[in-house]
Length: 389
Ligand SMILES: *Cc1c(COP(=O)(O)O)cnc(C)c1O
Image 1 (cartoon, helix red, strand yellow):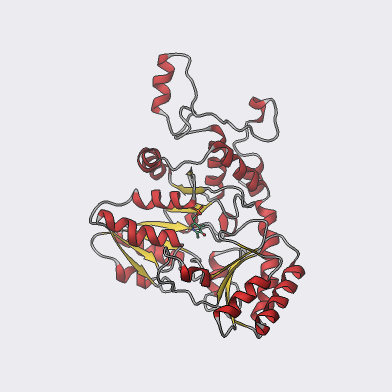
Image 2 (cartoon, rainbow, N blue to C red):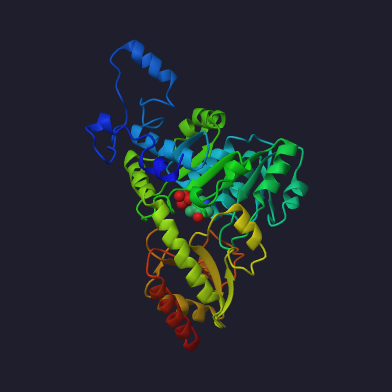
């Protein structure tokens, strides 16, 4: 199936909606039956047929089919946030006494799930340096059930060798769960490399317009059925039909947006990489990056999220760099039409992130759809202003 077929045609049932080109939003909590027998039958197929929107809704189901096809998975489930998808995927594999091996420095709330939430239920996690797959194997215990990957990981964009980690998991009979938000299914398809469950923050590139929070989980039909019948229905972290529709709309332009973002990012990164006031650029598609070959092997292209460390003497100078940017909004999240910055030093005063392990002069940058020269000029003037601050 080609990508434009998946995005434009797969699952669209236009003839049954008066040939409406855009799909309708089924903004309803439930669907009625004509007879008791019909209702009884529908109850058997809650995951597949419209019955109650916590389980199935046709607008959400259309997104589900497209996301499964894009990830080359048998099935998908759509959640109200990326964190809900990740939590459901991980929880579904675990019981009290079990153990998880997780890449270190994953997304902040994945870290919380692993190190604060799961221990409440007697589940332990070991965080490992994932740049060497052997570290996963070394951390395995008899009680290990899950190997968790996020490649590239958050903030520092270190890769895990997906095929090597999968090999270890298969040898020990473990389930692999991977966060694929950074690359999107267009640029990396972990299920083809043997990963069992792939999660996305749909809030980022898939929605793409900073107007919806959403999550996606892809995997085999058997695993999706199991998760549907437990975490999905019991914890109920579902998406609203309207937000599912916003993601469908985002998907229509995903290839074009990614192409543009990827090209702009390579230009901006090349500029920053040679700039004397930039100490370090964290971006796996830089030719001198130690994992450049692996990046090219397992991903088609880069997306637009990376970090830099600015050459500042003080936090005030680092803040001056951020405050002087005119074309980047200061905000969390990433992956949408607008360009964004998130300075690590904002984490230093927050209760939630008590001991940040990110340098205070680090700034995360998300490249949007702006003209490359506009962004480069803006970064150049802010770096100059930083030096004078
Ligand atoms: C944002 C993010 C998440 C969480 O997604 P939400 O949709 O915000 O719940 C998970 N993983 C990564 C890498 C993220 O950046």
